[in-house]
Length: 216
Image (cartoon, rainbow, N blue to C red; front, side, top):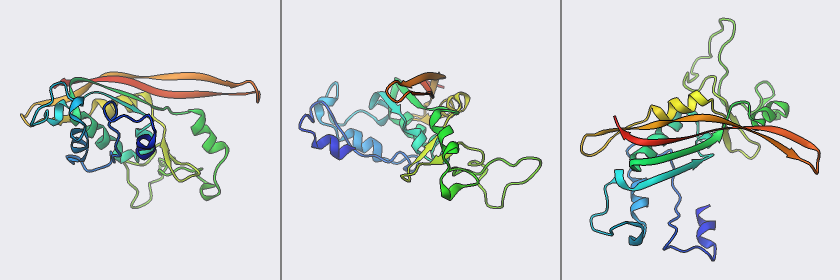
């Protein structure tokens, strides 16, 4: 994505600073701040040396269909990484797939041959009727709506409360010992989609919300 963006004739480094970053890097990794700080001087309000501290780098983060591509156990570290570079008072906007979205239902309507008993489901279902989980199963992953697409990529479907808890539970302590969190809320958005030419429709469900970085 980054390469295709930079290869576009309209790409202008004075307006866009594109780079590839792995949000699953270990917490505390300096990779993301370093990438942001490599932006041209005109990206800063008052270009100076040294550059602003990590906690003041970004005023707005738009995270659309990103968390769902990550394994459940790496979603919280990804939020923490974003919180660390968000400026105090800055905004984090999230939008992702909601539970019972048409895309999730399609996994079960058209199961892959490799997952005949649990269609394309990567996580382990919660036990029923007093049964126990198999030895070695990660309880943090059990019962999660985590799937694999046909092309090998992953996707996840969030509940509203789950998303709110994931983001609201993030904490960050800056270099001066101040603790920060994200304050906001999430809602479910339902859209009825219709393809008139092919005469079919479906219900799409998304979770979205907006959070502000505030002191604890």
